[in-house]
Image (tube, rainbow, N blue to C red):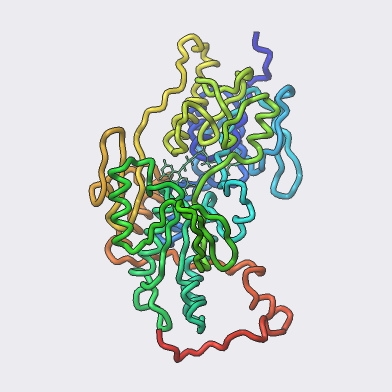
Length: 457
Ligand SMILES: Cc1cc2nc3c(=O)[nH]c(=O)nc-3n(C[C@H](O)[C@H](O)[C@H](O)COP(=O)(O)OP(=O)(O)OC[C@H]3O[C@@H](n4cnc5c(N)ncnc54)[C@H](O)[C@@H]3O)c2cc1C
């Protein structure tokens, strides 16, 4: 007998790919859906690096959730961060942006909160080596990248100038490779002839990787091709390098041969590794669920948490058959989780099948006209890879206007190398001694070097 209040209440935590596709699968179901996210937008994470590097605007990769889902009459979107869950009482506790709390009762819960950057036990690195998971992160990276060239322009000390013109990326997975390619293109193409005190094309881009290949997940052939393309672009690849120290002037790495090396780089960006956010452990403890080494929640083949048919985990946060953290996995698992609730209501439980991921492959952009794509046994690189990459992203980018805008931006970058989205917001006060000085009316640093505008590049 169904003793639930009608309609059945479905709470979905996270409006990423998993949450979005779960909501869509429930559109016609007789349920009341509450989507709670700590951000008001759905973010297309695979293109974060294009926002960070000034090709795309924030509006082209992030869409307001309530606009994307405006036709869903059974949905309420709430801006709040889930902090706790009472599994016995079936209530999610969340905190609104002003600090006040919310209690969200549910009959079914879908959790799709994704993963966060991991510093492998060195969280202190985060201060000097930010990662890229959110829109704020991408805009912060954009500021750091373009500001570094500005700082180099006004630096009189050649060592300081060189350090501002050295960019270190940690992790040679798709994000590290994509960012490395972008920074070299910015240096060599976008900023061409814009500076008088420096030659931006001299910027060094160092890509550090602990294993012995870039883009290892794409297999040896594509990894070799990607490394070759990066090398031609001027990216210096340092394989077998483990970062042991990061501070505000650079980083130290330990090589496979045991030696250590120090690099002076004012911009260090971290793209290696992910781990589950704290809410995952809260949920796992409350539901008695197991977590894998990265903190992902182990799920049953139907994506439920063992012993809790009312709780499903989807997307990056679920641990099932070693599925990778890919957008397509999140979309398919989110859609499956939503569908299973709908099928339950329709009494179609006996025909229910376990979740099966249909592998649609993956792609990584390297530079203009160059990308690698792997779809099962099919592999492509260079221009064909880039064209496939283009089609995939046009199809999956959320919103027609975003697609159109992105196409126009890509055409401009492809044709001329120029980027329209280079504006960056003011640095936070703690980053800029000059701000503090102007507030107090005293010089920021009495020993500050005087800039000599006549110095040649
Ligand atoms: C830089 C980058 C590049 C990538 N490139 C690719 C690529 O080229 N191809 C590919 O297939 N995949 C790529 N991925 C991976 C892909 O983006 C993820 O697999 C996918 O976004 C996972 O979707 P998700 O819904 O599980 O989580 P997410 O998309 O991370 O969404 C999680 C949502 O949960 C919200 N949230 C988190 N915690 C809470 C909380 N406590 N309370 C409320 N809301 C919360 C977040 O705000 C977010 O909206 C990339 C990822 C990154 C970061």
